[in-house]
Length: 359
Image 1 (cartoon, rainbow, N blue to C red):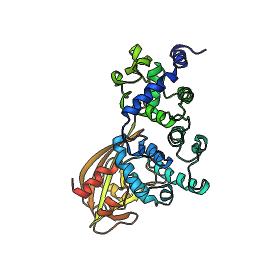
Image 2: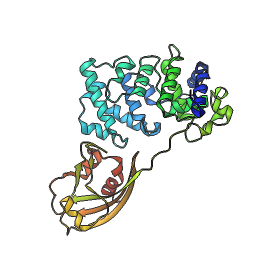
Image 3: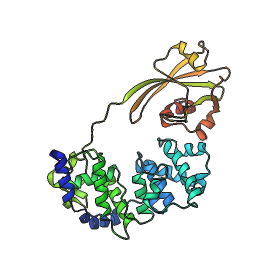
Image 4: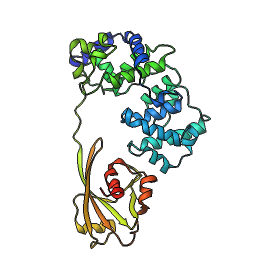
């Protein structure tokens, strides 16, 4: 038998009546739903792209990316045939570049195996590259009107506060339980609206970091967390491991109007993306040889930057070097290409800006 917090959690979630949230939440959504570009058309292509973009990205930040992406690739066929350099440029700044590569892989599979039409069940959607439980639920409910929950961190937070759940919301058991309970109460004819109403509530009312807006929540009277005064303390998450810190020297190698770039390894962090040549650790003149640069080359210390990944932190110092002739082993591109054609991860944004503006 479960005991302690876990036992209480199971009792709380099992007793909560999720069907009671449906009318009030839909009424609130009808009156308060934000106007968003991906809500204008619930076709699976638009829902799919928006949900992939919104992973780890705020709505306001995602809007211009969404508009730009659709201007360039308005349908599945154009995405399936798009060159990778264009895909990476359109995705530049969103991070997690494996996602846009999976978008292209997925589009090619749908073109080849499904006649260019998205499969209409969550089970089939989950078989496609880059489409997990959450994205499959979003497409199935919003585009196809199926009772398939899309349970992400926002929805888990809402569910944990509603039920007063005192355990860790990242546990698979809790996600599975909430998914099942929500699926059982999906309203016929309004499955897509119900999915989006849960998303909306977590995005604008039941906010993270101990800041729920209980006074304007349509479910306030049903919320166990509010009743018990614990809503701000929920959800409970496991402590994050400290990030590893790496010091890096980033070299801006210039030859006339051209700048040196190189591709990162095909596996691992920022796999296969362009970067400025770099060395780990502290700078020493003797280390220029590791980059194929003559040790007597004048080097100027310029801008610095810090970039945080989920598990790693880069502390970067930039160094500018003017070369009389290009060095082999690099791709030499113009500054204009650096701005308009080449996709660089956001980790290097400060250094590109320096090359383009001098500051």
